[in-house]
Length: 469
Image (cartoon, rainbow, N blue to C red):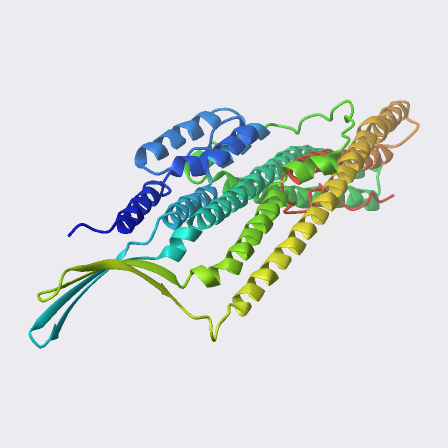
């Protein structure tokens, strides 16, 4: 017996739907992250899935560590070697698999029954296909695709946060190295002053109070050096965690001897808020989530009618009657559950996503304004230290040296001036560091949410008490 014409059409439609099922494409899922990594580090994102991939990463790490690590090289190394980022990237593989699975139809159901009535024998064959799922398949595919894009944006945020954290850690680590070297010079000068004091006391030119002051200064300088070493170790380890370094590669990590110089001026950057709203990934993710929730709301409004709709093909044969074929339409009567609760749940989710998207935009605007203000004020402060305070301190030191050579002031006053010089240099170092931290914070605020306060984290302290006179 040939199947009826309607059944053949149904089978052809199902076959067409099946042929259009979503295919698995992991590389397409990673493509936006590769582009983002290219923008941040100048290098494509490297996924480590096999031993050969890890070998290529190790070779690139070795190349980057061959020279003192610049800020850009540090970002490149972090995006290449940070295992936490690699773990986040693997979530994209999971999301892509879920998207592909959601775009495929469920397997059709097949039923068989054998009935007996006296001498009559009946066999009943049935083939069922969830028609509701078939009708809703395009919308389900779109929803899952949007969810995958939201996952890509969240992973992109993690990538941007890692890049920004690495820039800040690099600035703090280089500043700590610079402060440590300066503190060693301070200790050497303080010990020379204490030795000079002992000789002056021996010659009868100084009293013991003056000697005690110089010895106290040397002791404080030694303590400041210990603190500087502590801070240098802390900042270096923080950077090493972000770079994913340990063992022998960590031992080969070298940093520049000093921070980059301040720029001659800051450019005018108009429209930063609009720029941030257009390109920040958290804003895009919130907008995509709202759109996906809106589509889910539309789907829930119709799904309570079509979810319970099922179409099937029947074939009934008997040894005493001709073969029977036909179709079966099954649906539930919405007598007890009209789906109001599911619809109310979907509406609440939609309104929640709308408010969250608005809050994300407000927060993004505020973070950009704050970051720009700190960036400009940090530059003004650092430039004031560089152009005003340090030259004045240097002139005072030169004048005091001339007066000491002319025997107008004592060596004690010369040493007191050296203490003031130390405070001025340390303050200038801290201001220079804070500017570069503010620069990194502004760059991050334009692309994603700020993860930490960028400036004024901790001063570059000399650890020395005010000069005693």
